[in-house]
Length: 366
Image (cartoon, rainbow, N blue to C red; front, side, top):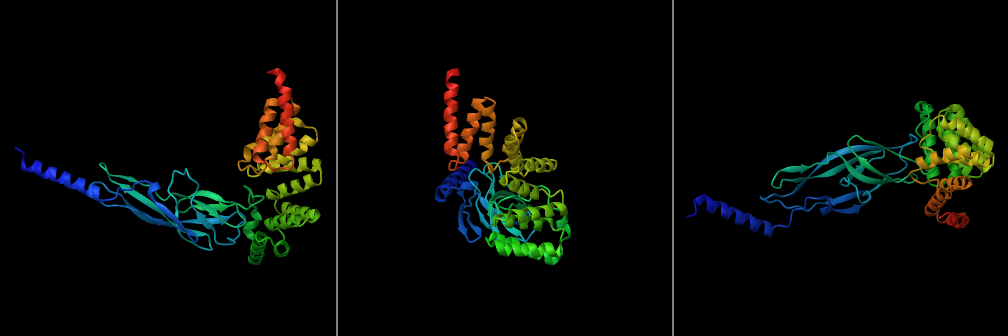
């Protein structure tokens, strides 16, 4: 005979089965979330079902982080936020607001899945997002509460050593610098030049303004003026790394390889890990000066540091160094890498020819 308690338990089980059949399946993973772009933020639509037999629900907690640009200036405009590339082991951020001061207020969906054993999939305050800002490099980052995200300029970075002279900038000089950066970002080089010149007049030890002045003068094909401005930057702050790369690049353009080697030696003493270009140009100079051993060491360091492949020609240079050493296999490896990284470069046809020649030279040894 079936007991009253057994009947109640059976009825409860039946009711749970009917409830599960009537409700949509609970969504307890991030792939179940739908994200639609809206202006500068992402609108999050979370579908969920609440049921007695183990259901999912979502909560949100507001957090804040701060965006900054490496030169210490104000943000030139409001950034754009998009979801980070696939494969992130974090949920996407839901940005609520972004302010001119750089403050970003965001939320992170938090999913609770009780199941048979109540357990929270809790990502704390961390989420993934990609930040776009005109004139700066795209940044796929992880936000967390209180984080400060530094956005890097397109082109030469400020580097691991930011000029100490920037700690004492008069207000008017800083304003002129900010205007110069905004004009430079918009491609208005003559306007940017005037603002950077004004900043250096108001504050003659403004190393960052001198460096940016050198940048706009170089872009306007005024190498002598650019070099003078970068020399002023180093005089104001000898440990400020960026002007070294600018001067090295100008020396390479002028085919002054001894100057390149001398400047590179001074710069590498500062361990410029954010400047693979310094090591690349150092390798170019020593290769031209017939100092292959020094060139190989420098170009290998450049490739090691150049995670973004901003200097693909370093692969071609290492290929030449290795070919000269009759390391044909190593040479082909780096020549091939160069062709992959820069398929439209002017010298790709010549490099392909070198690869073919090396293959023919290696064939008899096989």
